[in-house]
Image (cartoon, rainbow, N blue to C red; front, top):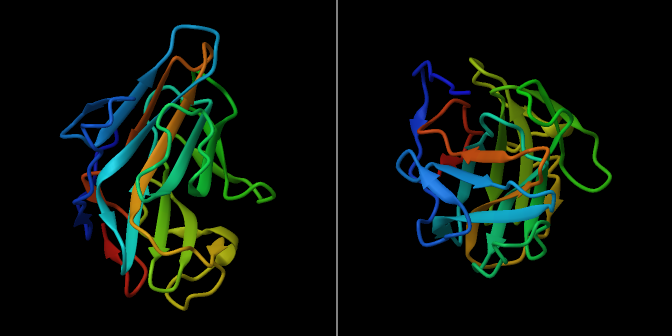
Length: 209
């Protein structure tokens, strides 16, 4: 499924998947990463951003397209040492985990922000939004509905005020956007897209990556 941007108020995204990361195939100017699998064995394929950040406040959106992944771990790799061929990332800040409730459909997903977190339901075309404050060592995760511009931050959190972060006390380092697509024979194709134009409004003080 392809999403057409409405072009109102969005900022262009400069972040791109790294073409040197050969665990996935890339398209659309390195904005879309795809993992495929035709065997019954679960595989994990990851992709990192070209650019990394060491400071500042950054806003980023990710969404899955077409068939639903079994799992898509979305977050940040610290210092570029995550294993891109691991189904479950380990050296990783997050995760915002997109878990399929109906493989091979384009209906409903759920998102959990941590092991004990409450699921956020996503419909086809929804995006995960993340606000990363490297100066304050915090990460917020939310959901963004198509045609809307205000992010529903998980738990009613407010990145602008610094309250309600899902992850805090983050260590210093170089943070790369990371998505690991875990795919089995019930979810043959999984994709992760960085929108060319961010639909959501970044929290005050945050810049679109």
